[in-house]
Length: 274
Image: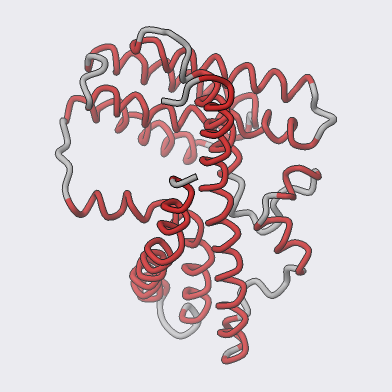
């Protein structure tokens, strides 16, 4: 745990850099990769329609600060992570029973939403208001970890997950009411949340397969749409979609694994020394 204001600032900056630097590197990597593939075959010109300005704004997250948002549309989920780390750093040293910690965090999210609405003329605060509800999904993971580490009971964990789910629905409603009216989306969302609620009772055991995908998960997030979409565009007109998908998935996993161990992990290792 970080102590004091300086410790919280250091923790926040380290975490934000651990998100931002891999994001910039991922964009630079894919920009070069798709340019090379595009020179070989026109089918590889997957994102050539975006200008250099749009690439820079999306890769650096600058788009969220100037109000243009993410035109390439793959970095928006980093904003909830930024909100989470800011809230986590500020509340980590608050003396509160572990049972109620996620409730305190949820209060932080609601406060962030209120500030976003209050200062909505500032693009980044408006952005925070739009995306703050996604942070509740991260809290679901924290609650599961608390149950797994026996910090809280399974029964209380189930109660917290249900409360977290209700908060998520509220955020979803405030963000865009159409999501709640879109039946397929709502069904899939409820299904995912029910799995979260059931997980504490299933007592899953860690294994290498799960650990591997946990390790590369952030790299997969950064590159799955880029690499996966590019590979699909190369093969979807030459074979059935399902076969193109079967090629795309292992290629994407392979590229993300290389990116994770050669770029993302060294960046995180360097930041831990600071």
